[in-house]
Amino acid sequence: MPKLLLVEDNEMNRDMLSRRLKKRGFEVELAVDGIAGAEMALAGGHDLILLDMSLPGMTGWDVARKLKADPAVAAVPIIALTAHAMESDRQQALEAGCDEFETKPVNLKDLLAKVNRLLGLEAAE
Image 1: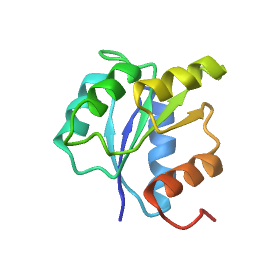
Image 2: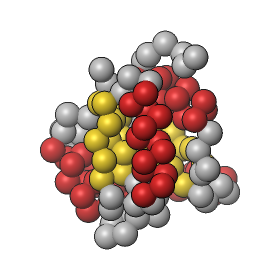
Image 3: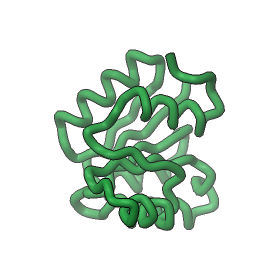
Image 4: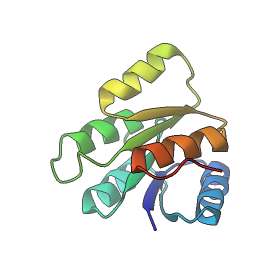
């Protein structure tokens, strides 16, 4: 069972996404801010990280840069989650080290397709 780290400060988004991902067979670990998210990610054991970009403590952009700079976790794919939908925001997330980008409100079907592709799993139903 793939293990995901969901770093999201909005309780409603965190709850909704984690429940839907668990329902689809993923193990989901939660972090509520950038600092906790970075610490949990650096501790290892995750197959993929879903990272909100607008986080308290440490922004998602800073978390992504920190993780991609650490050889122990640099290969773990990161999907940026953000309400910022401009092409420049997407570019900024990719430059920070994110492998994919999903705008909020999250389209679950699109997100699952990205998660499955990055994990090398079969296409989502």
